[in-house]
Length: 148
Length: 148
Length: 148
Length: 148
Image (cartoon, rainbow over all chains, first blue to last red; front, side, top):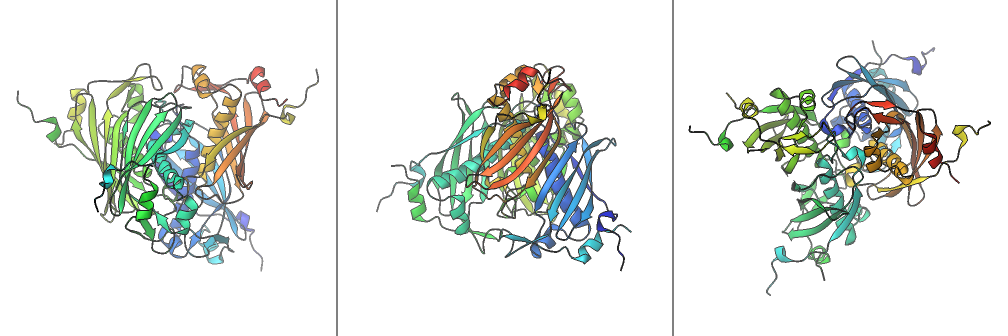
């Protein structure tokens, strides 16, 4: 059976709306950069929720998505009050790991930053808080992300 | 047997050293106030550790100290780079709850802020992440905090 | 001229929508309490914006609202994924200071927490990042908050 | 005049001591990953301070070091209470930008994570809070980092 390479698939895009708050900014008057990583994490969870894997289900099924790596490029400074969207999609599925690509865009269409997270599909040995083990990502899960 | 009222006891004082980081400050160039609450939380854990109840033991014994309330008064603005101490002590022991009082002092002796947390002595039903229930604070635990 | 005491006035109510994110929670699996103070700060700014004093205007007019004190009572634990509203109103106007009261309510109508912030109406001596000084709150500003 | 390529120079190493606090962890019971970026930022400032460019001087001279990009690889999970060091050094000096490499190591010698930040040597047009502009990194500054 011939297959499209997984890295080429077109993923559905999740949208996470957010805003730059006063406390997200630093004395330079612009966004403190770890804020983007907080946003990317929240956006990854929102993307999962958009295909039926919300926080409640993830907890009930003892699922988690620990990180392997993360990176971000900063393109334009964001200011207090800026309204933004994080647009997220699966950039690649591996066996047990996957890459989430994120675009941070201000509502005036300025692209503020883009980044990616490499995560593992993991399960807790005995419920949240206990050790996690990576698992093969189920085909059914991968299928949920295929854009139609 | 006559007893000194619990609210009058003199508690040992814990010291938690910290510093105002760039990302702890806001566009006004001073500390973003929720930072003080992050410090108070870390200082409460450090106070517990100072009497033998460190994070590892708390986890192993399924103990936690959820909050009932917290407050803080801000006296002087802290700047990026300021080195500070949080001096913490038990202000009061109740049956299941206790009050931790915190003083935030800069290393030039300026008192920056002071606050308090009311916490419950709690135990997880089935390990971290499962529901918590308040328990009577053991006399042995109270005794650990009595200043000699 | 007789006046309604300022502490009795009925303020307009601001609504700040938010969600409990994964990183807002602690190993107990519930919201880390300083998160509520981050929310209250963002909600206070949103309340100001709702009467025409958004971040851009505050910056341009060199205005800020530094804190005198803050407190919060925690009523029910919030979990990852919970969608919440912070309902904020001016509880009291003094000469240079004001009190913002906040109610944190989950979308199932559970009241999670309530708190207050006492703030000063302040102006930077020479733009953001320079020292601030309290000023008498203009009557025109107070009037903006009176519920009709 | 022949020169050693700047990317090959051996930089002095800064050490930033820190600890994993309760609120730095997530419901999985391990460190919430943006915490590492908060640490890297604080460690970069500490590295600057170790060569004489502390927060006070940076403010007085209107200097800042805005980010171009940041990345981190996560090697082992950190737990509440873990005491850690961030070991930081300049990995590369460009004309206006520089790369800071960070190693996050637990006090049992476990390497938890490593990452890097690309930053610009910037100056505020008119003091903190006003726009920044990149500047050529002074040779005198570069020299401060050369390990002897």
